[in-house]
Length: 195
Image 1 (cartoon, rainbow, N blue to C red):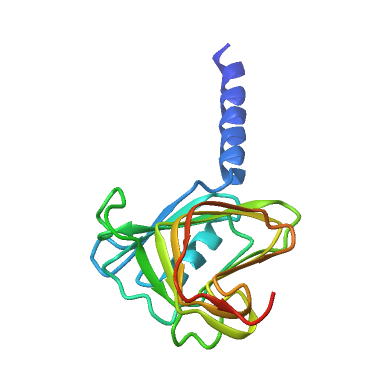
Image 2 (image 1 turned 180 degrees about the vertical axis):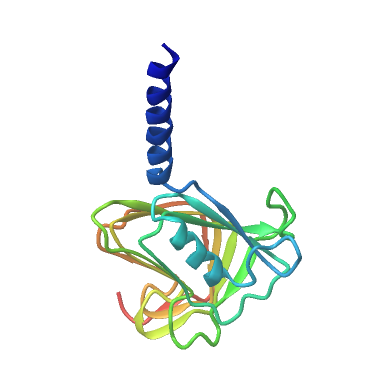
């Protein structure tokens, strides 16, 4: 009788292993800053790690205020991810105080943050507790944030200031990009050359 149960147990074990091997990746939290608790030293490196974790994992990238983020041209393509600032350092569990400053000055004329989803699967990207500033894209659209494709862009507690572009100095959204904006502050001196 025990010999009959053994093959079923082995079959179940193989079935479980096969299921685990095909299971999707779990959401991860990446931490960007300049202290020992950080997983990454740059925002783009953390975005790239989130992209490697899977497109629909809803990863969170915590950006500490203790790092210097100048010359930023962050590119997120086809990824469900949230960039969340306001952490004093990478060891902090919750954001507190001022938003994290992300500065595009010197990035070669790119938007400070580009979010695009060419997929037919709608994805959500979030920008929370950030100050996005000094993106200059006079020959293109979206100096601060450029969003395109099939996605939802959730913006909360974000200040956009001193961004310039041909269209959409602070933010430019095109395509199937419904922008859900909550607690967005369009700061001073965002300019666009035309509508």
